[in-house]
Image (cartoon, rainbow over all chains, first blue to last red; front, top):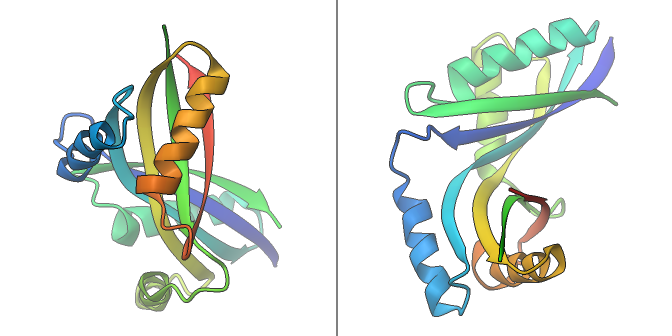
Length: 84
Length: 84
């Protein structure tokens, strides 16, 4: 069995309002950072997987994203897997 | 003025317990994904910056991270800036 690490980014879909990001964009002005706009906030998830090869590890992460880590109705995800 | 996009990952420090990640690690077992361990959950933030050059944009993002986006006592951050 090999060990892999995965880094997953889960973001709200572009079509969907991101109230947290909107609030942070507004706060930038109070910090003299009005050059910053369009803040969007999602989740960054790291994890480790034991699997025989990279294909199986990728499948497992795909399943984890769909079933638990992302709400695919409102969020999109991308991930990257590396062997440890 | 040029436009840049930044992608920021804010993660709980390794020394600090991540109860959300722990809970998700536990849930993996219920989904027949017990090969997955050591889940850690942070934030992924994207934003846009107007600046004269990449150095100034980097400075602005650094300030935004320190003052607003990350709690440096409990979290670490890394970011990547690209010209749009």
